[in-house]
Image 1 (cartoon, rainbow, N blue to C red):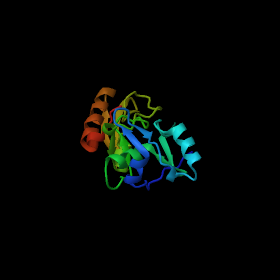
Image 2: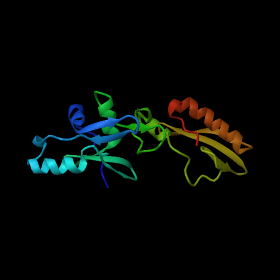
Image 3: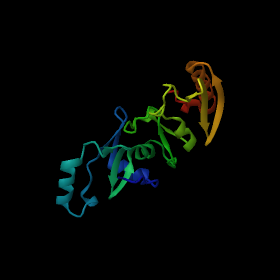
Image 4: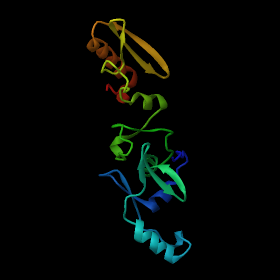
Length: 179
């Protein structure tokens, strides 16, 4: 499994290697000069096989690209191409699709913000994020910056969920995900 690299190559280098397609969010390999290779034959082989094709591969952690033998998360490479300067330690995907590299889907995030933009756990028995059964009633709670906040006990799941949603919007802002 690939290990994320936080140090992304310089933007100038990335622009020599890739074309970014804003419509699809894909990185496309550029044709590379022979000076990038040990021989002209190697350059011809590489360009014949890869130039003008979508770069990288997908796995369960998202899309990856290899540059000079090192694996990088494609969304971090895209961020560097689109935003000159420092790449944030976390780049969040608004729609939770780790393979969606479109610019409008990527945003800089703190660890807490990134953790707020998650779906309801699979083992949730109530069907509502932030709502738990509690002795015949329903408890609402939310986590923010590593602290769990108790929001109260309610007679119905829907009341507890409404409390969760209101607090998620207040604490997490644009990163709030209700389901």
